[in-house]
Image (cartoon, rainbow, N blue to C red; front, top):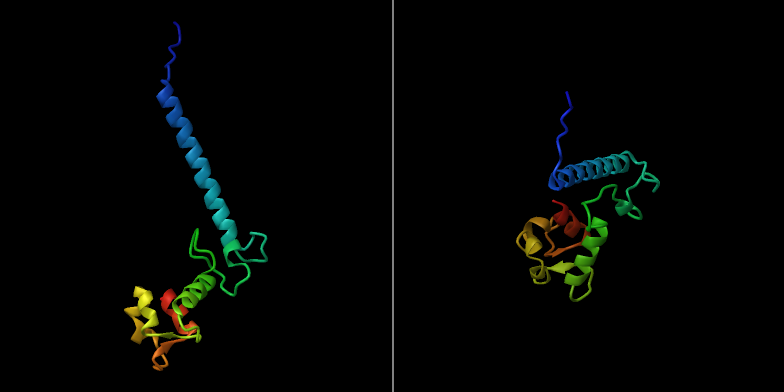
Length: 122
């Protein structure tokens, strides 16, 4: 008796190859993420996004350093460059403006950079 061979269509072969590539890529990404979380990224125990800051975490791809992003947003909104955000200046940032009174913990009518960053992280 002759053994029967099943012929695979080109579509099936490509589908299997695509699935294998996605599985290997996902496994590689998972391994890289696990190594970064374990502190073996080669950056002195910090992930590349957190290097150069006091923050030991990252908010994901493209966000970089949350402290730097908060500082940049604060500086753009601080129109008079006095180092604090008034309620009027905060209107440029709707997420902050809506919670201005809640974020103004010292009740001085303005947000300090610390209050601003805490508001972004909460």
